Amino acid sequence: MDFKYDVIVVGAGHAGCEAAAAAANMGSKTLLITMDMGKIAQMSCNPAVGGIAKGQIVREIDALGGQMGIVTDKTSIQFRILNRSKGPAMWSPRAQSDRNRFSEYWRGTLENMPNLYIWQDMVRELIVKDREVCGVKTSLDVEFSAKSVVLTNGTFLNGLLHIGKTQLRGGRISEPTATGLTEQLINFGFKSDRMKTGTPVRIDGRSVHFEEMGEQPGEHDFHKFSYLDFAPRSLKQLSCWTTYTNEACHEVLREGLPFSPLYNGQIESIGPRYCPSIETKIVTFADKTSHQLFLEPEGETTQEYYLNGFSSSLPLDVQIRALKQIPAFRDVHIYRPGYAIEYDFFDPTQLHHSLETKLIKNLFFAGQINGTTGYEEAGGQGLVAGINAHINCQGGSPFILGRDEAYIGVLIDDLVTKGVDEPYRMFTSRAEYRILLRQDDADMRLTEKGYEIGLAKQDRFDLLKEKKAYRDSIITFAENYSIKAQYINEGLERIGTTPLSHGCKLKDLVLRPQITLQNLSELVPALKTELDKIPVSRKEEIIEAAEILIKYSGYIKREQIIADKINRLENIRIKGKFDYNSIQSLSTEARQKLTKIDPETIAQASRIPGISPSDINILLVLLGR
Image 1 (cartoon, rainbow, N blue to C red):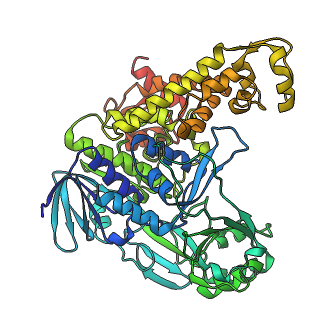
Image 2 (cartoon, one colour; image 1 turned 45 degrees about the vertical axis):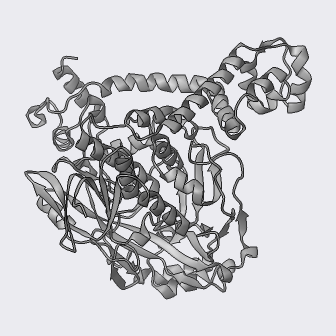
Image 3 (tube, rainbow, N blue to C red; image 1 turned 135 degrees about the vertical axis):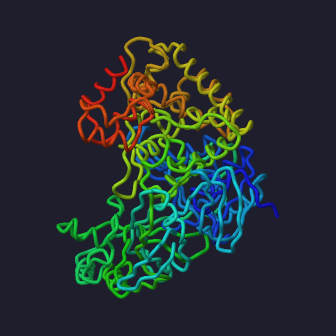
């Protein structure tokens, strides 16, 4: 066995898998170290991928040449597009996956990937010389050397589980904690803190009264996560189910609050504001008499269900008694209770945008170690860290995505510029250019970038060029084809839209909310002929892409102009040009924060909390601008 590698990735969660796959696919000899090969890409919380803004991240991962979208499509048991009632900038894909098959598919992908090797062990120590990482040492006293190391330890760094008064050391239930790394990194000067997250009870579906619940079926149209051309959803498609808590349930929960680790002082770390436990909900929203719950299937054949909305660290008996107050769960049996977990993370302002640490060269952090939450946020970071770990080995400029290029760019810039005061979760509201960052066009934004660095392969790039050619052909046709009122008005009235008073271009009709290219093609034979040129397997996807660009072109162009103006500040580099502590005209807070973050550009400096416009103007004056 060889003990020398280009890249070592520590941890095989969603960040680690993407990091290892990216580095290996780009040509680096890569070692992925995991404590349990049976838990690769384990879905520790709900068995779902995507959702609001998160779905956009998964499409971006896929567009760049990552794996999460492919694995999700191959193992999904339900798919939906969320926010359909809003504009396309808000549409977000989401899938339920078969938990076991998701992990199995990821493992098969990694085990059969050239340049990628797997070792089952726990890393307890980094090998560092002259502030540069050289490898790792494991609990089996094995030393591996590497040019770059990526840490993706998830919730395993000194993980501690809470169920009422019961405390268990571990990274997940029944899995050991990881020790040694936090203490070593603190000795190197890294700032660490503790975060908390939680997960709900797992329910035996045979004990559920589904007739008391609302059914939430999936969708069966062309949408999926991956832009590659293959048939997804080979597994049986299943429904999710909805129900509500009630006052009787809340009363049991309130009685249990003195025994909750969240409220009796047992847990002091930072928890997620946007995914609160059920006990936090009844305290924070004391006036609410009910909270919605989602019962989600864990797999195609299992009876295990995940109760979304009921995360808890209350004692086991309190959780069960509270559940039994809900009619659908009056006879409930569970596989295991919900629990909270505390774990170590590191202040992400200690990172460059490449996710390389500022204190140790060639060392990268990705995922929950940076204070984030969610598979998708982890996967996006892992992909960028893996790409840059490879680049550090082979040479080249860091791969960095801008805020106007990808949600992944927003995510990483927020982390390294602002830091975190709670587990970071992506929302569409965090992106100032969300009309540019739609789920339908991630391939147009990113696939060429992935191809240029060697991650996206030729087949993916060829599909992009074909899609763009067909899409642009439709738009050109719509812009140039003229329609006369007497030939179209009867059809327009059938659709329910106002007849024309005079002729117009086809594009002008597509701008109407009642009109789609598909229903218009039934009225305009020439348009139908144009659309029929598109390969059937990609037809609906390409038509949707063209239609969005036609309908929203004004908004898109306006936002692009704003992004271009801001990007001028992104090109004004200031790293290493100032001793901020000596600039007395800056506010005290600005001097402290600019010294701590050491921003790369004026634009990044302007996004640091506490940096005022006057502080930015002072820097611009000092630069002679």
